[in-house]
Image 1 (cartoon, one colour):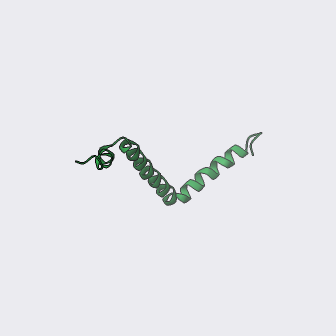
Image 2 (image 1 turned 120 degrees about the vertical axis):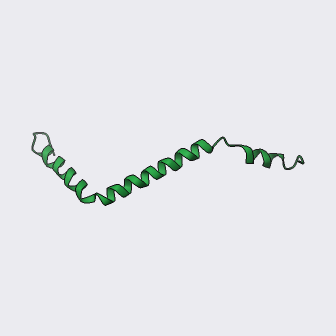
Image 3 (image 1 turned 90 degrees about the vertical axis):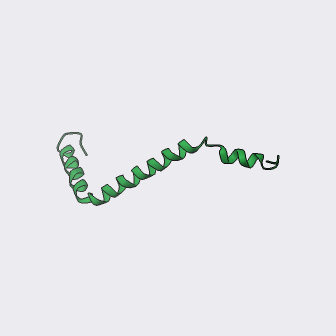
Amino acid sequence: MSSNNRPVADFVRDDAGAGLIEYALILSIVSVAAILAMVVMKDQLTSYFSNIGNTVGQYPGGP
């Protein structure tokens, strides 16, 4: 290997950022799954949070 190609070969072999990329991919997959679940369960979530808001509104100091 010539001395001109050495930095390129070192860059190709370097795997220092691989763990960070794997965590980012896992986080993005989990985020997409959570968003899809919320979209599918939209009506149930709306009802659930409305009930919470109505319950809190019944007590003094509530909204």
